[in-house]
Length: 418
Image 1: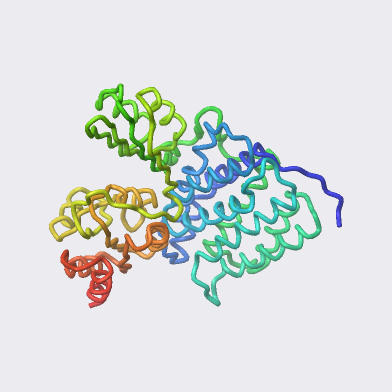
Image 2 (image 1 turned 60 degrees about the vertical axis):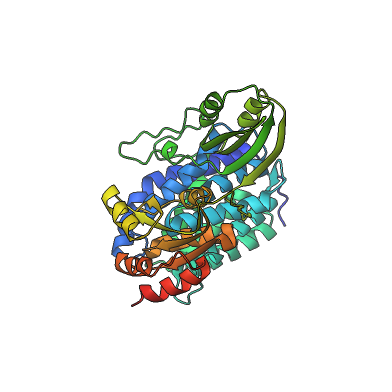
């Protein structure tokens, strides 16, 4: 066994994630093109990956925590919440596995990081259905095996990543699937970031994550607010309108309500510390409750208007109006080529419009994002997975607001296939 005393810091992790984003800036259009040629069910997987990763790196620009465990958790939370499409969910699961392996660590040895990396591969692999002809699954297993042996040999992290890449590429040297392209682009980007070898337009964490190319998705547009914070202030010294104005600077869905001598606040934010800092200046803070909305949690409805509501995806106001007339109550933006993010689905459920929701996914590339919403919100959400708008319309026509979400989901799924 090699005598390796390498230490991976939070700064190293930042560079690795920035390197991965930088590599996808170069490769995302090539991945999109391969998806069309490969009849991949995700029409724009490269763009979905880039936007998911963009959501993940935004928190690094203002992060005060320098620990590798804390930074990994912040990236995982933001990437999970900002995940779009099949590829985005797979990548966010890889970050979730990394964060699990690095949890509680200020720095990590090569062995510890290598084991966390194995977690990441495992999490990414298990989110996809097992298929005997899946090149991605085959490559993921080869990568995980190579990483395992490299970790056991106590190799430096750069050699662990190199071994993983070489092992995966040998699975099918003649043809790489879209899933493999995504995985290896990520691994190569991490390796280049670790070495400081950026070959794409510079992504400066200190200057607001600006990229030097035109027509690129701006990661600032994919900023997510993954923390739901509620609290009350006794004998508040703040006006409701002033409080709402200040809170909206740090979040969205800012609901401020006065009840006798108390001020109740419900906010979705990515700046928990700043929100609390402002609140303590308004009076004594009580019953503070914080939820990471990217993780499974119990969603308690507060005086919901409806027993059950239907959510659908639409790409224009005219299309949204068509769905509304058919009975849908919540519309999120998206189409066959552009998946909504997990944040949009979770945010809709947190609006307290209904006690339960039936979410209709009209395209296969949306399925994993919707399934993540179900995993996180549990029995509050039921899914109807369709193949196209015609099936989605059939499903919606079968909705009955007098039945439960679970009953509707069964009936609507049957109607979709007629």
